[in-house]
Amino acid sequence: MVSRPRANVSRVRARCYRRGVSLTLASSPGAARALALVQSLRAGFAAALEAVAAAHGDPARFTEVSWLRDDGRHGGGSRFACGDTAVFDRASINVSQVHYDDDPARALSSATALSTIIHPRDPHAPSVHIHVSWTELRAGRAYWRIMADLNPAIPHDADTATFAAALRAAAPAEDDRAHAQGDRYFWIPALDRHRGVTHFYLEDHATADPAADEALARAVGEAATLTYARILGDALARHRAATAADRAAQLAYHTLYFFQVLTLDRGTTSGLLIHDQNDVGILGSLPSHVDRALLRSWRARVPAPQDALVDALVAALPDATPAPVDEPTKAALAAAVRAHYREHPAALDLQATGGIAVPTVANHGR
Image 1: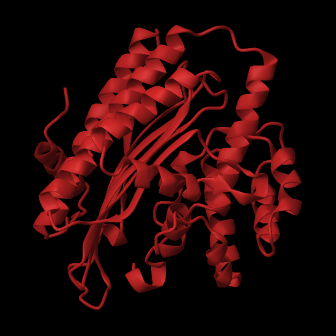
Image 2: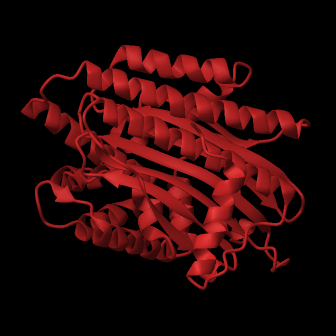
């Protein structure tokens, strides 16, 4: 059962007050509705994933880790995290709300988001990335960003078709546009391939009917999370012992995922450049291990100065095969990304785009 979002908000406040820290939430009614929506999606997704794990003999449970923006004055968030279990390699379901109610000079009024990535341990079970966020700008404009993409190391056509059909049913009028935009965003030019097999991406989505827009965000979020939980269960049910070739394919794909996130993904880069108060959470999308030598081999395929970024990422990884991506490593990776774009700000133009002009970190004023 999905827990009541308003109760979730109260518990977050209570925890922070018990620690002697006051977490403030955005004052806007739209931000409050968005927070209730993404908390509801997270609760339902975590419960569905735990049920799948339990059905396959894994008593995995998500634990909550909180973080604060500016000691809670400008909001914060928490992630439900799980990993190193029989079912999950890494699993992270993040909810955040950042606001600047006390600073009218900021272009950004508030940003409320769910962002989740699940990497199963079984190479035949696909990873998934889902993002639903609501942004309010000080000038009065507000919009949704809605993403869902299936990321298998070893593709299974039935899983791809099931996920795509669920998103199409949730947003029939937007499906063609969202898939076209997603295909552009998740293309990796250096490797001449996509990250993932099916991509839904609506950027800057706002119509004359805000209630319908909110309903669309909920429908896509529920379709993506609950359909993925079913796909994961089906993949585990048809499980067979993973071969060395299966494990090698998974490690290569996890390395590709790592490469795309840290060299092309605008959301990840923006989060790291805006602040350093949640580096581990922002990089919660990374798998537990990658192939350092394979990553290094892609250096020659990227345009300058991104070759220097690949060098910095390789240097931040432990010299091991495979290389673990633990919390100290995530902190080092975050520092490498920040240093690179501060030295080469024009390189931000080399990052992925879905064909929609995305507001920059600078003009959001975050």
